[in-house]
Image 1 (cartoon, rainbow over the protein chains, first blue to last red):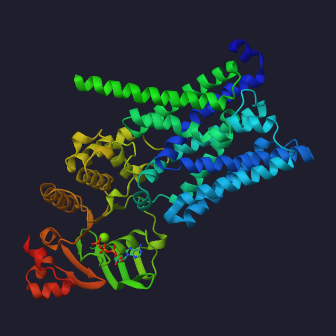
Image 2: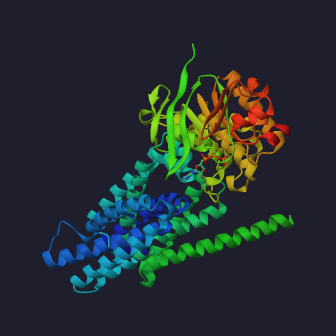
Image 3: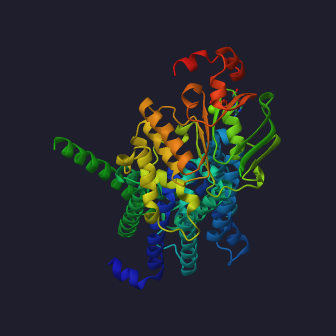
Length: 282
Length: 251
Ligand SMILES: Nc1ncnc2c1ncn2[C@@H]1O[C@H](COP(=O)(O)OP(=O)(O)OP(=O)(O)O)[C@@H](O)[C@H]1O
Ligand SMILES: [Mg+2]
């Protein structure tokens, strides 16, 4: 059974804990990403992270650098990518979504180059693309724990600012908020959460974990606080169901988690429709 | 003793080559209720943005609360209602109460007392704009005028010392407009909040304001509203810098 497996295989246990962590932090940060309409930018950033991972794999293969794992290089690339994106967004003020194709294509381009240099696709890169149930080492888990904790602290600390800036940047600026600094912190937080989530859901689906639970929550929540709480609940359910079913069906968990999220979204919309129809008939 | 809150000194502003403000100087004393009027495109929003630090100063100087504008940080002294209240994100999942609460942000210390303790301020502000019953309604589900009243509540919830309103009553119905002007007078009289109210409807504000400022690229009149009222239409039109015949007559 899974429980036995969880108890006996450390990697599996680490994956499960990581899942719980990212199932919490990704939808939490995702709520701000969705209301600020940055979902696609998160996607661009995840491809830059892939370039970092590919770079790490390449370095590992060619120079056997053991202290710098692909996970670490992924985080570094992600943070650099975040800073580049935020700069592009302020340069192209009037059409900020231009930052998406620029970073996305650059990320994919660099990934292709490094993957080729590292002698092609191997199972490692497959795990990074779609997630894996047994990809998390103990040191990775600790790093993910620290990142999640850091992001959580920042969100608690900057909650009012993030909320006000997402809603009405002009008013927030007049109120004395340092919009620019907070935007940078926010995009770096996004980079950190993406790097942490990639172990579980993979590069291609990481933005889904940040946005699908939020899309579902928005349909039922009555306030911003509720949106956050429901997003986290939907996120955790998707991660737990996705990891368990992925393990049994031998499917990369990225797929099962996202499909669970999509099912939750569909069910929520249906139940809401029935409920409204019921109330209406009274 | 009167205290100067804003001092604008010889400000000129251009967008590309187009000069929109020319040698503007005026000051706003604590306790004043200033009506800033002028036709469309006369530079009202521009001078407001310069005073709020939203637009970069090109020429001249502005002092807010005794400090040069670039050294001033707003810690709840100044609040603002924007002209384009629809600049916010319409699908945003926040209740009216949460939106008004955003106005309290600068009151919160680093330790952040829970908003629960400050909730009565929020209800008080909602009450002042007659929106209490919508406290838990989603902001996107309110009508344009109702949203505008929520933004007005957000701007007064913090009890700022200076409140700047850029055509805040656009989309608000007549009954609520009159009530709103009364609320502004009350804030001014009872709480001593200094007000700058931008409008292009000169007729409906002259009875409320203590100072009238007519702007059209440069300042055409700055003084007492009753002196302005006592002039002939022709003199006023000249000062307003535009034909304002129709505006005063629908008063
Ligand atoms: N960001 C901008 N870039 C270029 N020109 C601008 C910009 N903002 C305003 N202008 C121009 O500056 C002039 C003054 O604009 P402003 O918004 O200050 O007028 P206003 O008095 O507030 O008008 P209204 O009554 O319509 O609100 C206008 O001619 C406008 O076209
Ligand atoms: Mg204007």
